[in-house]
Length: 115
Length: 118
Image (tube, rainbow over all chains, first blue to last red; front, side):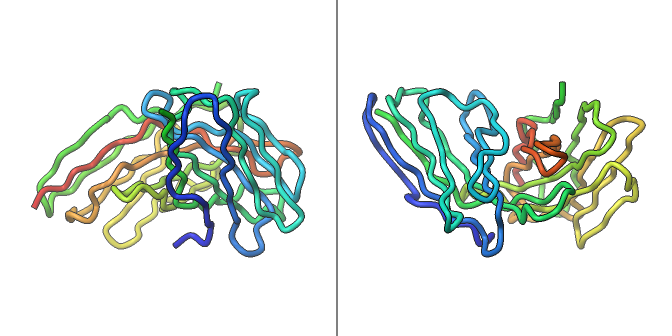
């Protein structure tokens, strides 16, 4: 168990809908990352937050947004869902306190199925 | 551009065989980290090891060993005396520097699916 929690574990929804994925980082971790794992694209970085502020952005669609709250949990919002958004969404966290490169610990993922 | 290549898509071995998973990376950074993660059938991503660009020492942890060679931009992973529980998808990843020199995102290879048969 990495200490990173994600809810829900599974999500089934319809095209055009909006969903929110939730992530709680390991205790003491300030950085949160979101990744998408799909069959055709593999594992791709979406976005990073550090202590409530957006820190880095990857291949995140404009229909997707995220935020990190004062208690450090993070939410990834996916709107106007399309079939191609079906994927496993991972949240990861790291300490975020130093200037070095840190290990990211991953949550169990949320499996999203868009029908 | 930074890139990680895992040329082996799938490998199948019989229990107790040794197996090596290859990873080749590309980066222009002089400071970087390489990682291996394991994704068992249950789906979670489990951290195995990280190595920084200044430390080319090989590492051994039980049946697992890693060989880092900057000259060939490779970071290979060997499992000795494989077991059925080693069956998983293994990902090699490269860290990319983020904002202000701090931890950035990971660039993953496509993964190698290892099947260990009894």
